[in-house]
Image 1 (cartoon, rainbow, N blue to C red):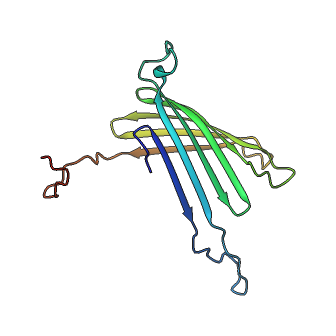
Image 2: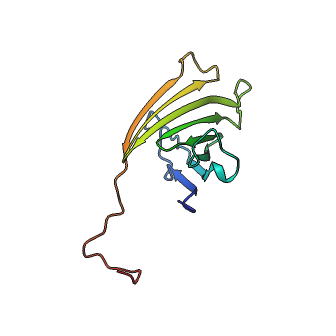
Length: 164
C-alpha cells in the first residue's frame, strides 16, 4: 500500500490456512503463517544536503522489510541512489532472533544496480554471504521488467470525478 508518492508501507500474511507439510499422511505438521511488513521512503537528496557530486535530481531511497515465520525472523534494510536512469544500492540481511549460538546477526550484504530506459528495467544484484552456511561464493540475480503505461483513458468508463 502506498502512503504517498514518496513513501510506502505494506503488510502481508501467507499460509493462513496452515497447510500440512508432513511427508506422510499419518503426521500433521502445519506450516507456520508467514508475516511481512515493509516500509520505504524516497526523497530528493538535494533537499537535505548540498549535492555537488551528483546531478540535482538524484534521489535516495531507504527501505526495510521485516519477516516472521514461527520462531524465525529476518530484517532487511538498505538504501539506494537513483540517478536519472541508473540505480545503485545495497541491502543488509540480518537475523535478529539469532535462534542458535552459531547464528550470525548479519547474514548477507546484497549489492545491486539497475538501468532504466523507457518502460524497461534491467537489474543485477550480488549477495555476499557473511555466514558459515556454505562456500557458495555468493549469488547473482538478473531481472528484466517492463512497466506498462496504466494511465490509459478508458472508453465508456463512468467519470466519478465530475470533470471531463
